[in-house]
Length: 346
Image 1 (spheres, rainbow, N blue to C red):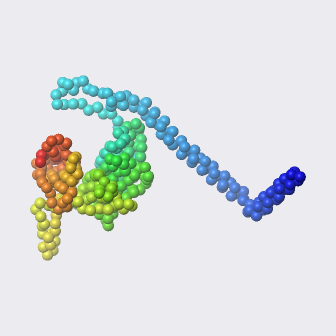
Image 2: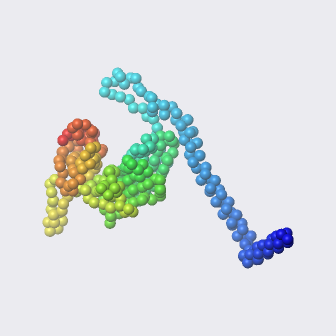
Image 3: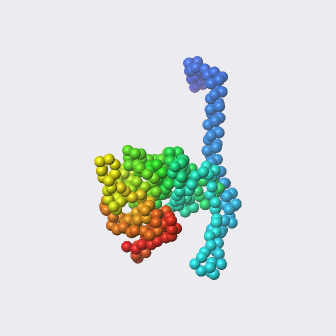
């Protein structure tokens, strides 16, 4: 009948399981306790990771309640007395962003995220060039001004400039005091950059003062430009897993080569590049500001010649130059000694 067959089948299955248990080595009590501890630690880490996002949301809600008055002032505050002040106005301080990790560092650059209007990146370094320290990049949000959203440390050198890609809001390029360039993606890795140049791959010989993303090239590769104190404007292109470079412009001194060194060797001298900006409508035009105060209008098609040069009467440059969108394109700059602004029309 079916019952004896079933009983025989169950007995044979139990016998096979007992044989398997005999063949397997028995775990000692120590190994068993270690296994339990490991499992407990894994469960605890899983629980903490699950709480990360809810805790972040709760923190934002608490901060929004604390800073609600500031948020209302940011949206609606107006000083009615401005109507009687003529050309003078009033500035209302709102948020104060600070972190214990950046107490001994200087804010060197700020860039707003093009997609998330409440998010900004702040670069930290030092302008004391004889005593350089490491740098940092902190991402702050207006929704939570008490603590940065992302923290990126740069132990090799301080950050002097940065720029966020207009189409990829998690991607940004940074220029450093040691002349290197790095590209980070805050969505993938905060510990190390995706790409970084060195001496063998086009690194600037002096500090990098500005970086700027551009439209993709003809092969649809991401690319950006940098200007450094070594007199080079460099075009950087991300090709697959490599950061390639090409010199877009060499800022040669207007006086030409000078005699230097034994034997009367003629050495080409270069101006110190300080800042640049690209034309808002013409992709091939850009301007470069030098530390001596000259403003050069250049074309991407020429790497050794300028289209036009403007001699500044304001002294050395300390702020970026930029195109002003209007019918007659103007160039705006700020002098270091005079602390004035000037405009130039081509």
